[in-house]
Length: 322
Image 1 (cartoon, helix red, strand yellow):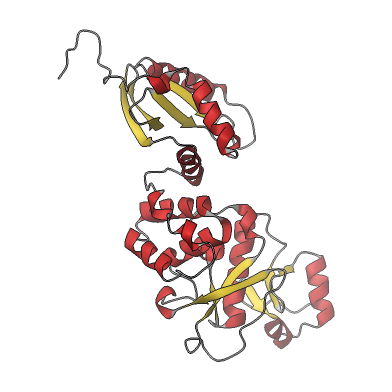
Image 2 (tube, rainbow, N blue to C red):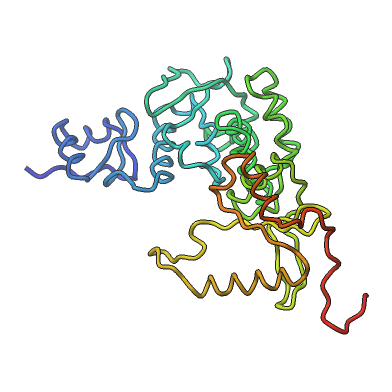
C-alpha cells in the first residue's frame, strides 16, 4: 500500500498527516527511513534530522509557533537566532520560550517545559514583535545574556548594533524592565562592553576577555605601512602593542587543506605592521578561556611593547611630518 503524500509546507502536525490518511505506523516508518523527523510532540518536518544545529533550532521555533499559537513567545538564544544574531551552538540544545504576562496572552494552555523546551519568566506585549511571537532584538539580547552569560550577550549586542537592529536605549530599557531578575546586576553593565565595530562574534568575545584582563583597547586600528593600509583588531591604548585574533579556519579551505599562500600573505602583513614600530600578539579562541592566563600571555608575547608609547604614524623615507 502506497503511503499518502505529505502535507504542504516544511512543518506539519499529526492532525494534518491523519487528515491525509496517515496511520501511526506510517509515521513511524517514515521517521525510520528519513522521510520526516520529529520536532515537538505532535509536529514533524520533512526529511532526516538536519546536521546544522541552527537549521534544526529554526525548525523547533517554527513548530512552537504552530503548537502554541502565540501563547508562548520565543526568547533568549532562540530569539537571537531568529533575528540572525550570533549565538553559541552549545546553547541550542533546547528551545527557549517565555510566557506573556497575565491578561496579555491569547486564551489557552501555556504549555510545559520538556527536554526540548525551556519556559522561563514573563514578558510584556511591547517586547514582542508585531508579526511573530518572538521577543524584539533588544529583549532577546538581554534574555540571552541572562541565560548564557555576559560574553554571549555582548556578541549578540555588537552584531545587532552594527546592523542597526537596535539602539542602545532599547537595550537599556530591556535591562530596566528586568530590574528584579536574578543576575541582572551583571547584565546591567552590558552596554559598557559593546563595540559595534567588531567583525564577528569571536572578536566580540575576545575583546570582552581582553578588557576583563585589564587591557584598555582601541578597536580596528588602521595603520599606514610600507605595504599599504593595514588594520589591527586591537591596540592597547597608548602603547606599541597590537593584538590580532586568528580563527582556526583562517589558513585552511573548506576541505581542511592548508593554504600556504594565506600563511605567506599573513607573514608579509605582519612584517609591514611591525615595520611601523608595533609588536603583534597573536591570539586564538583557545587563549581567551582563562582570563589570568590570557593576561600573562599578552604581557609575555608583547616583548615589552606594553611599556613603549604608541609609535608615530609611519611615513616613507624622506617624507617629513604633515
